[in-house]
Image 1: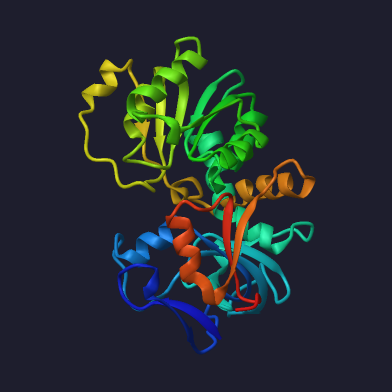
Image 2: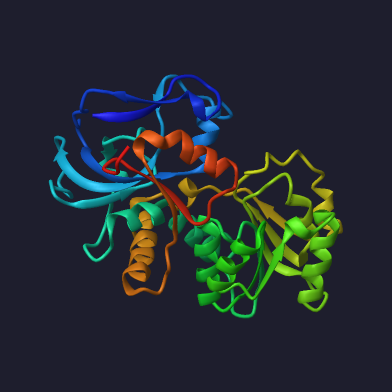
Length: 331
């Protein structure tokens, strides 16, 4: 089978298309023919060596496909089943081993490419909006990267729960996408001279001086201060990523001075800690996709051999929605 390996820590050029033996599923495992693999920022962090990894390694952890074979002891799946996953190493490949306990059944009414596009980001948007800070009717919400994969989905979910969503984007084209997803107000931070001071002023003007109940921030270093300053009293800053870099340590006493504020750094694993929780969240997301009530934007699709180009596009913030690698696409 063909797969994409990161040969060593470095930039996108370290990604190489290689031929590897077809893996064999062991006890409790599925062999899945990959229909599409999701491309995520965490893949670039691992490729670059930001997160410790063994090299070479096959990149990627997310995707969707068709079960080709099952290992000993697997009773919940059989060949031909459609599944998605968010945590199976080596997903940039034509075939991948997926532990049965992390495989998510995909309804026949949901296209496999859409399933791959919504698996990680849909579950992330779901836990952020329903659990980390459960959005309430009438809440004002600030959401950074509003035209990104999580941003577009979280906007829709928050609006469904009765929130007024304010997003930030970097271009007018992305602003149009964010508005189409339901954002009430969109701020193009490329037009601001000082994001840290100007964005909170805009947010407070839009909220009658109160500030927002919650700021969902996946950008990190460049936006953290603006997010914190945009919160209302007892508001929450949910830092769930760091596309601009990691936030340095800060004095917790600032939360007191800002109005008894909260901040948290969640991750998906802790919000899908049991299989029941994983399936419950996934079922809700897939039901919304199947009914047409959740629009999933696939912003770019690359053939497997062009994984390096997919990473360049993602890191250059040249994408909207979800980026996918498709093994069957022409290389």
